[in-house]
Amino acid sequence: MQYSLIATVKLPMAKWASKEYKASIESLTWKAISLNEQKKVMINQFSGSAFEMRNDIELKKKQLNLYESNIIPALQNNYKFMQLGYEQNTEELFQLYDAWESLNMTQLEYLEQLQQLLILQVELEKVLEIK
Picture 1 (cartoon, helix red, strand yellow):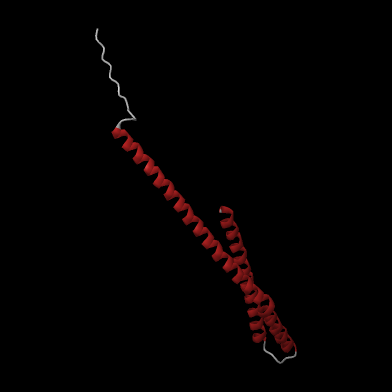
Picture 2 (spheres, helix red, strand yellow):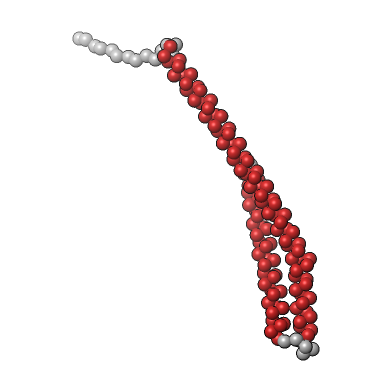
């Protein structure tokens, strides 16, 4: 009875094996550097988008402030004067209707701007939460 035995052995101390291990180590080092650079790129993207959102939020706040302090009160006064003029028969009904329509459209624009501001604030909070 004869039996044959076949075995394979890896010799880590052999000269040709050490080159392979050094290459693997070098590859892992470059992969780690690559991941760190990708992380820096993502941080830059998020901080840039957060900065842009902050600027947009400030702009929307200024626009809303203008609506509240100047535009809507002026249109309300215009509507009141047109209504008073119509009551005294010095203004036409269509002029009163135009003043009312411009006031309502401006108030709707104000609400749309407010909605956009709130959406921007939510998006900014999401971006800051991701960081």
